[in-house]
Length: 432
Ligand code: ADP
Ligand code: MG
Image 1 (cartoon, rainbow, N blue to C red):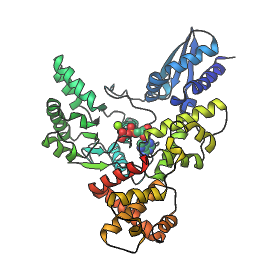
Image 2 (cartoon, rainbow, N blue to C red; image 1 turned 180 degrees about the vertical axis):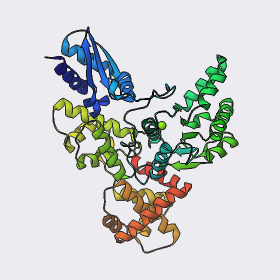
Image 3 (tube, rainbow, N blue to C red; image 1 turned 45 degrees about the vertical axis):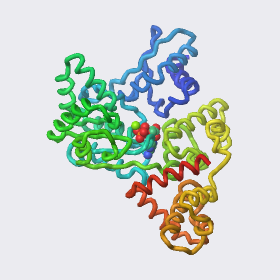
Image 4 (cartoon, rainbow, N blue to C red; image 1 turned 90 degrees about the horizontal axis):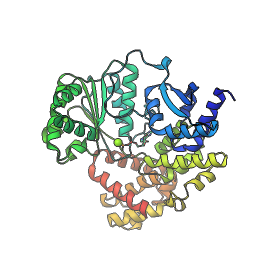
């Protein structure tokens, strides 16, 4: 075997050894050198090299040793031809993840504004929305979008100084700087950035000294028209123990909320994630996964990994049967899909109305609203068509159901009490 063949086998073995970290772009990895017991692997860019180093080193080492029968040390380098002209300032914060790009982000009604504003900001930092504040529940893509902004800024404006910290890193570096008497350096570094990205600013809650420091950093950047991008688990006004002057600044630019994706968006996300891993899955499998992983997109990845691993082990294509087999343990709800009856039961109990009322012609608000919510939930939690949903709710036609879904979707955007009702109802329906 020549070294090229060995390398191909190593990559293939890695895919079996570590399905969770296998990616389609492994095809872009190149053999740079292999002698003296060191395997040097060339990566197309820094993000992929760092990803491999962080996540794939063990699998590569093990694979290389298994195939050659020798002790092997593996190193990942950025292949020279791919290096950007200008050396970007070394980032201090989060390592940019190669998977989290705009390309791999699925846009749907749940995240359209957040996505569009991230694109706008990465093309003209400091010019359009400043600060940009994204918020939403866990697992809805906030961090993904921040990484995507970093990729985009680095690709289109390599000379721009950008740093991405999670808020905890900010707080720790700040405390560290005080302890070591290096506060001026800490401040100087942050304040000279063109783009400062801070994830999960709810971490500032109750940390008064850090809030004070952050306030001054914010002002320095803002006054110099430098871009600030922030995320949190709640809207600025709901952050709780965060100083009012910071909260008001968080609202100066654009505030965009991310909502939970509906069934179609979830299906598209499953398909994107599968492609990223070099997996071929059909609509039926995507539908199956999207149907059973609803609340947190992070769980979709676990589901895909399990399916990938089983397909790889059995050497079989990914069919709905194989997917079901792979997900059997993880997804107990698999046996029990949600029915419209489950939804009607939950909604009638919650609003204290009778199922017969929902099916009646009554149009009073206290009946019409629960009826519309039923329709909306049936649309997002089951695979029934508009006609079928209308049929269960007193024989209403599809345009009535569509109108109800749009109405509730709008209220979900604009009205926090409807949002809370929907979340609570979804939780009750899903937990049975
Ligand atoms: P958050 O920071 O809001 O908690 P993350 O950005 O960490 O959420 O997202 C969790 C996972 O879900 C990530 O793997 C991310 O890629 C994925 N994800 C969330 N929304 C989308 C989307 N619209 N398109 C593609 N992947 C998504
Ligand atoms: Mg996050």
